[in-house]
Image (cartoon, rainbow, N blue to C red; front, top):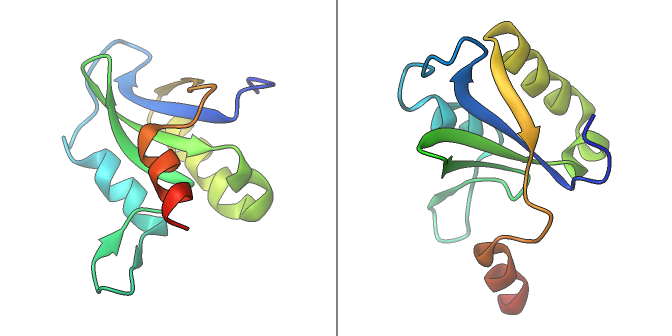
Length: 105
């Protein structure tokens, strides 16, 4: 699926063009891999993040998750299928926040 794309995006739009509800679905789904940071704040995984794209709530899934946690990756794809959500290739370059995290390491 989407060979060569390092990221896939699950869009908050069904195959019928309807917005997926509830409106915070992307944050809830991304929360499944969230962890508490050293400062005690809840942080999204670098492999699964809620984003807003094209006027829709979406979830960006790093393809590295497929190798790191196959069960979680399969769950995400099944979630999209069960809810008839659109899936598309994501960015081919890193997001600005990912570059910032690399510089701080």
